[in-house]
Length: 378
Image 1: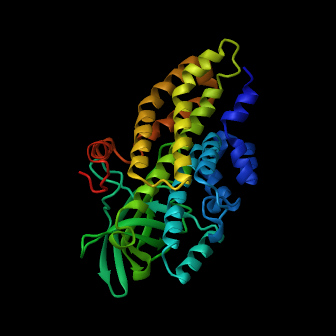
Image 2: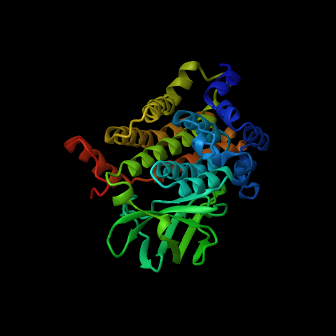
Image 3: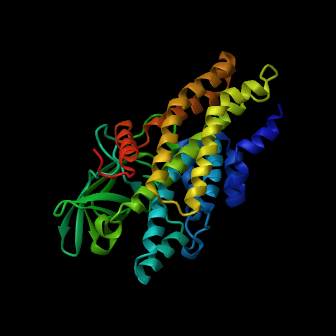
């Protein structure tokens, strides 16, 4: 097999170079292991080379990448730095929410959003909590009424980009009305702090820690009540579709790098490669189809359900596929190539991303039986 040609086609590094050429060059020059060291700070490199502006619409100061273009680029980022792919997914989710909000808000707020994007503001995302019985759609943080706004209390754990964030966009529960809301909080606000969390080596460069909120004040204009701003849950659902697409693309990129290590071995045939890699590449093709529907304006519950089925299928196929790939490499390769064990460990984290299987089951059966998905499904 021609590994060079396969790598050019499957790694999608060309997509990174198309949109963020200097970032692609820098990550390639660093190499995987160096890029994944926390001290390298790939997030800062991404910020320096215009990464935060990638998905924002051009009229808001962004680069205007479509959903499919973002997926292609993120597969390439996952190939070059799985930590960066995991971390930046949360930023892109927040930017999508801001872009959606900009279509309905006043001119002054649009100007603020545009300024943030043009200045490469890094947004962390506080929309889920690492609890077994929790829900991504039921906030654990609370906001209490205060003079001119609210005070927010709680924690977001785990939270990627915690070391580099300029702002965090988070979901909260208004404790006076029981309504859900989304708020934007500046890093450095009194009462906001970051506590260490992630001590494992895999994906440690994603800067994943705990963000603590102790009576953090948020003005009224930065508290977006879901019942008012998003009464049918359309924006929130589309945000999780985007999250699911982008986070999965990054892991596909990491798995691609692992699989391509077999491509230039003389004892490994085309049939061998396709057999081992098809569960991963098959999911990628399905992701692209969902991304094309998203770009065409589909924000339906059917799109939400289709992607969730795809993600659950990959979750069950990814680990066995990676195990078979690593097994074919053999013990000597495993012992002498540190990328193999590192990538396999990184990929195992895919199953930890929300929503949980319990919640996924509720959503999917709700859709099958009633034709719609309720964000408050039990």
